[in-house]
Image 1 (cartoon, rainbow, N blue to C red):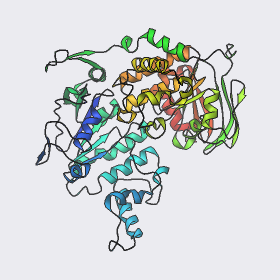
Image 2 (cartoon, helix red, strand yellow):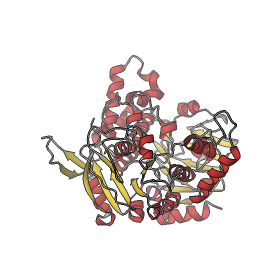
Image 3 (cartoon, rainbow, N blue to C red):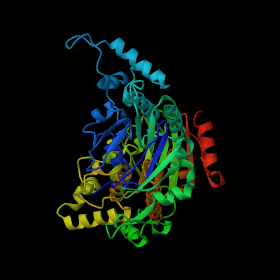
Length: 512
């Protein structure tokens, strides 16, 4: 698979340049070529006065002034912030065998954090940082020597897993960089970020540039049209016809219906509209007293700020976190207080985690192996049936590349997310918990994903969505529960289900 082909991209001095494209369009591959993680087959890269055919390593690219912050800000969770800095800067010491000057390390780390307005201490564990804090710490780390020849900063979908409000806080720091002489290549799917911060845009489709120009040149609908373009290159010539996709083409309804029939559970005797899941007075972590229910076929949203317990609740429901009190009942069966993920799955709760790279899939396994990992026993000695199921899911979700044997770790973030969602649908769940399900997923893939989920809900699957995007709640949920101080502080329905009202309620009530 040739991920990028004949790409020409110019980031002007002191400019923020947005790089857009659907999942699998080549954005991350291009970014990795520019920062030395991959080496291109042909072409040249010019940074300042230096022109090379390729950077052989990320260290070589960094020495030339190219820095990158990858998606999910991959700090080492078990190390302190200062130690993450030391891994790049080196541990200060008088000599090779001398003890580390910890006080000096903390002081230099604190200076870097303060320069970029990071509300974190050098002694904080990286694993305890909020997503926005991780991003800004990674920014400070990437620009640790900003006064010594940093030319280009690449942001590879850094804000994908950060709530919009916190993402704007992070990007305000990025906005200062052109004033300091650093150009920025910003890979993103969020059009608000393009409108608010970008000076120019380049759009990729199937590994080629389909548009480049000023950021304010295209409307949002035109951006979507280019991003979701379908390319046809039958003659293998340089001429490529771009055909915008349409909503009705997102997923073949017959194929989706067939998929739903394949994983749908037998009736639970719960066709009278009674809740399929009931949570009563749940406590644990930041959760103090949370109660709610969801019926078969219902799609509900749960919103709140970080301090409201919003991150703990999906962990409790999926068995990844022990609750200290309360009760969770699924189809008349209670989950034990020390419920394990296996217990939750057995009772029909499947969970799509927010961090797909660490918790969603096995990077070294294939797409096929990831999809059927939770139900390996079902397909024992039934290879043909297993492959048929996998092929149908790959086709319906339009996973790219459409190859069952492709390694999960080589897919783009959006295609990884499709595989993770497909994996849990294959388990035939009663309830599907989705924690920020479209982080890093392009607009067309988002619509396609939700088209399949809505179809599944029509067949009786209950959906609980945790999201950082009010628009997602407004478009897909019948009601939204707002958490604040570890409790339910509001339930929005009807005409209150608009993005503005949801955002206002979350901001004012969730912090109570």
